[in-house]
Length: 329
Image 1 (cartoon, rainbow, N blue to C red):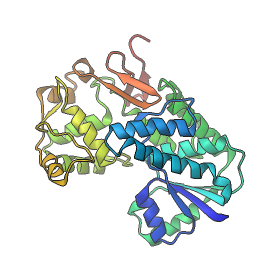
Image 2 (cartoon, one colour; image 1 turned 180 degrees about the vertical axis):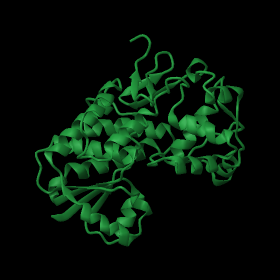
Image 3 (cartoon, rainbow, N blue to C red; image 1 turned 135 degrees about the horizontal axis):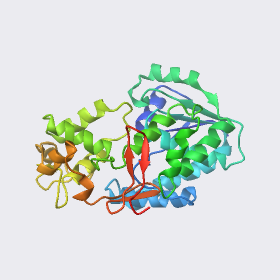
Image 4 (cartoon, rainbow, N blue to C red; image 1 turned 135 degrees about the vertical axis):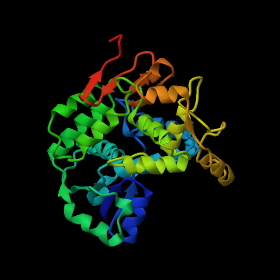
């Protein structure tokens, strides 16, 4: 029997833990749950199949490779009784908080309670030095029923077919998961804004381009610095950027037909990075709240369990923290 299983957010954190000689088998979770379908009423393995298909469509890896990686991950999680203890070690941002909810929800449905621990870090793990990372161990706390109950509610709300249950959770105390509330609000800001029809990411991107930040990598860097808790990687950001330049009514110009993919050869990546972007007339108008993007552009994407489409969109009013249902509801 191995002494400890550590589950964390990805390979960078896992590698640093190994460099810091933190004892245990380390399992990186590796999923951008804030993007794409996470439908309800699916087992861990069935959900992994859905996620593998989505990530393959995004160009991450072949679907068979992704599915194999998820299956290996899921098998190890199912074998948690092999370990004396299991430590869930996650950061404060939305990317991590959704992964943490998924894993806590899994354990809420298991019999095991002894030997479950949690480290909730307010710093980015991969940016720590090995020595600083070891100091996080003093944050170790046993997983309590309160953690599991809140995670189960939140994970169910995230996977619901409307964002209403997710918003309803804001009325509850979430102090046992201290970074959850801000992550919940940040996810809601990816819904279309009540006036502009833009997500917060889209609005921030247009604003940066309007201020003269022109090239994709520079835009992503500036966007990253503007986030209170960065959760979006560059691949996701570039996909969002490409979507803003696509269609019959683009918000930005200058991509010259390029779209980003992890499979792009290095030479083509540099061509993509060298594009100089500008706002279209619609982009300027939407940025100044003179136009509603959803009246001009098609939206068809999924966040968790709910599907967004421009014909009947859910909208979020960040100023009043109010969810507006589609007009037909």
